[in-house]
Every structure is written in structure tokens, then in C-alpha cells.
Length: 124
Image 1 (cartoon, rainbow, N blue to C red):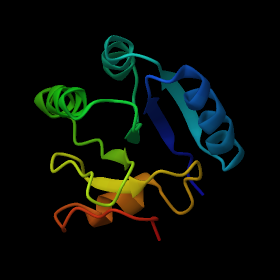
Image 2: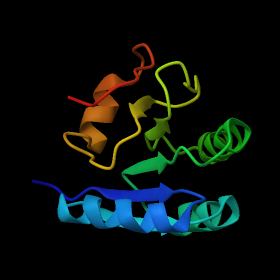
Image 3: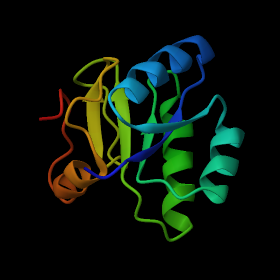
Image 4: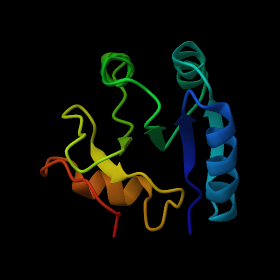
């Protein structure tokens, strides 16, 4: 099993910390960023398998961050957490419902979903 390094971005630092602990217990290596500026710096400095954008980030900031990631030439998959099934972002590779677990979510699973319709719900 390969390790997945995740850049987790969220503006609610308490929630980001709590979720990061859960994801670490599921075997992910998690680097947290509590602001858009911090996320950009972390992304530029690191080598991530997956970027996870929390539901506390506005749609405009999610789009801006995804644009910067893509503009850098990176093909790192981006997963956005949605509050509701209708709250989706067309720029994300995958949408997930708002829960703390990552389940079967991995860079490989996200990569397989690329090019298909945006999904909202639990990853399987």
C-alpha cells in the first residue's frame, strides 16, 4: 500500500485539526493549511498526491486555488467537500459529501474518476 500525501485546506482550524487526526488514523499523511495563502505556499513547497478543499472555503476561493494549482502545470487531483448534493464545483476532480472519513479516497481512485461527471457522495 502506497502512502498518500494530502494537502488539506480549511478555514475552520478546529474542524481541520479534528478531520486531519481522523485522516491520519486512516493512513494518510496530512499537511494542513488554514488559509488560502498558506495553502498556496504549502502546495508550491510540497509534493502532494491529493488536495482536499474543505466546505468552509467559499466557491470563489476554491476556484481560485484550483486555477492556481492547474496553472502551475500540476495534475494533482483536487477533491472538494460539499455541504449539500447541489453544492458542487465544476473545477474539482471529485466532490464528496461532508463527512470526516476519507474511506476509499486515494489519489488513484480520484485519478480514475477524472474525466467523468462530477460526483457528490461518498467515495467508493
